[in-house]
Length: 523
Image (cartoon, rainbow, N blue to C red; front, side, top):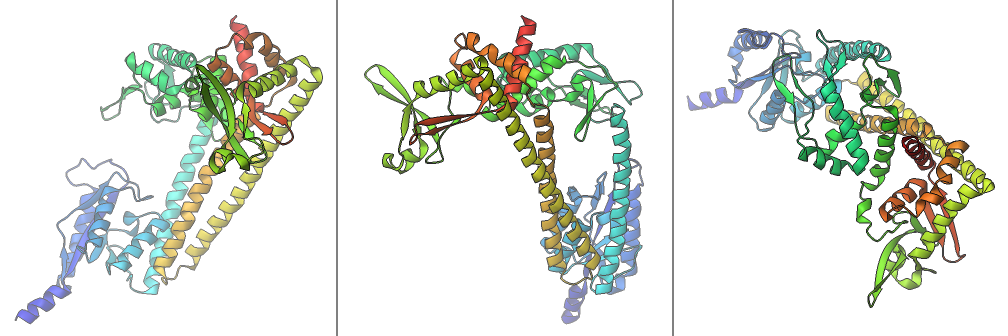
């Protein structure tokens, strides 16, 4: 009798029912889609009672979650229970309830294989323990993924057409605008628009995001507050570095909408003047390199972060030495500091001397037409080389992404149920490479757009540098360091030959030219 009971327990199949619905519509009903799916699965389990099948009481319901990814609470709990040995079989109404992604589905099947858990679809008969059953699963899931991708493509096409016409396509409203009655477009909220302009001006005063955040929060300024369709309050929070940066770079304030790499005139009115916008973007780009930390440069090290030792291919750092009450500034080779002074032919150079040389070099450009022309040629060449390098990297990435996508399709086409774990691992690796490649491709596109818009011309260069000489001495050390870092990309010191090479930053020259033009217009 005891042996018979043990055999019965061994044959028991613990069935977990998983249900999913993509939207929350109808879930508030007493009997909804999730209940219907569960009822069908329970009936199927009841029909297999003689085989020892039992229904686990735990509910694994994902209401309002897409099947295109694994970011679902119930599926995560289910997989955790499988790994904990609490489940022998997964029951779903249809395959696409479990996942609409072939990659995610392969990972789930690998986990089921690892823990000897079977998989049953109530409306689709197959056996996951055979090659034919696995092939049938992959075919069904391929159609589910195809359906999801077709829907996504149609949605993207619709949004693309709307964006190109300058229409608002929904999403979280931003400070300065309200969603119009009936939706479909946004209108200016004058009180909030004034606050947006104040934030832009505040950033221009501080030229550092964190300082602006602290001042805005001290004044009690908050982000956009709105009410969802379900009546829930959202937003109205104090600013953070990330939220303020998003506000300062949102092209909606120019009265435009962005689609991929292009900007289109929007149906909504602009809040920010284009001149103010350009100055803020130039300051953000500059502070993106330095973190807005120029104020820490209290000894006025103009070339800190720019100077390099040519023989050692090493950065030269700013240092101080004191004799009595006097301090002496100098730049020292980083390699000599680490490996010994005898490893570098010229381990240090007086800071004031080399800084004076660089400043005089910039002054000479503004006074000498030939030097101005050569600098302009150098700036254009640098821009061209930079663009060509980015475009070449983009072409290489596009080729690599194509190969990865071809490999994914090939693996899916060849799926026959064998080596499920290795196939899933290979698919996961390819997917990660595709994601990383697409992210880098987006960054490259943004850099190309930024660089293309910063090509300097002779008039702008002359305007910027003609005012350099009369205004330089009136600037504070912090302002002088900012101007140098805006203009200069690198200074290379060759202690053996006794030479110094200055490489200018073409986009910086353009930014300085715009800043000078804006200041002159204000005066």
